[in-house]
Amino acid sequence: MKRLRLELSSVIKGRYEIDVEDINKSCFAINRSFIINTILCDNKIVNYKVIEIRYNYKIISFELLDESHKVIIEYEGIIDGSTGRYPYVKEKTTDDFYLLRGETVFYPTFEIPESEEYLAKMLYPTTNEKFQIIIKMNSKYMLCTNLDKINQFTYEGYNPTFAVGKFKRYSGYFGEIYHMNLAENSIMKIDSIIKSTNEYMNRFKNEKIKDFKVIVIPHGYGSFVLSNTMFITIDGVSEYEQLIHELIHTNWNPLCDVTVQKSRFFDEAITQYFTARVCNALAIKSQEDIMTNYKNQYLKMIKDNGYEPHPIQEYHIYDCGDLAYTFGALALNAIENKIGTNNMDKIMSKMLDKYIREKINFAKFKALFDEDIDDIYNDYFLTNNASNMLSLLI
Image (cartoon, rainbow, N blue to C red; front, side, top):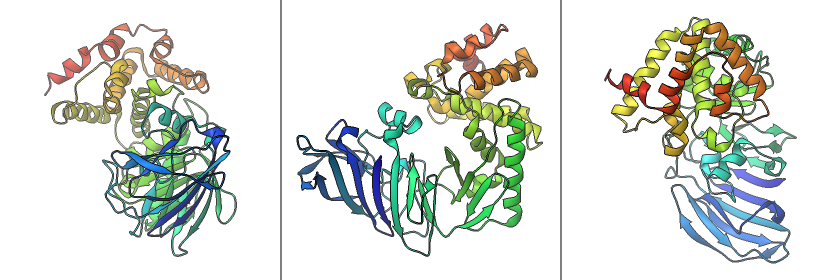
């Protein structure tokens, strides 16, 4: 288990402990705003140096003593707004609210951020990736996190993420909402949508959203889900599509390996398709209107944002998984239109049941269909035919 002590104020101070057997190299990454005070191997001070500075983090090499058992890294610093990750705001620890997450690199990581090794450990953590974190902080703020609270100061879990601010707590049908200034009717609406989304998605896979935390954060920080916790921006609370999208991520995505995941089809495209189905069922917005929006968004990305169209199966090769949010959902909608909603529901249920522990890939996905979908699969997944047809509308 990794151990971390954090003091959270305008200045962050950290003491990170890890067993040598859990690391495979004598270098680590950390936010470039942080200063390393000391690195210890079995309580002996060792030399270190910065060997590279990248976007918002630096890589530090240190002397790993022979036959040492434990490494301790002591560091501190202020996040001053210069190391935020696009497209998020440039967060500052001097503000009344700040967010510490993987992109912040607020603790040492022995995998290079955004590498396949790093992503694999974030997506499918083993027991070696579990943290125990002891927190000391200013009492005027509340700490909200995806981790389990063990006692007043100690938290345990994976992918530690912390929102620090003047939060209030509401207990609802599914768990808890943490917010800074939400109106009561907004809170009730969140509770209602979570319950209705859960009930609808149970037609595909029977799950219950429970012991769940919704942490409402300011505009610009980006919404995301980690295991039993949703971090959602204040604008996303009233944008019910976004709220539903994040809810679907909690229980209704198949398992896949990191390379396939980079295509973003089996998480984001499938979630976007399900989002359209839920919104249609709850009379929030019709599935047809949502698909029209996806089409327009896709064409805008191709025309204005410089994305090159590629077959969906090649998204991971060309690092264009962002297109799956729209074009991937359009592909699933096209399949539904061809084989019928009832048949599509059976296939999606089968997929979620079969690939809860076994990892899916594109060949396995296509094999789920008894019906002939070769033409659609060819046009969307193997060639640019469907994209070219859409591009004629520009």
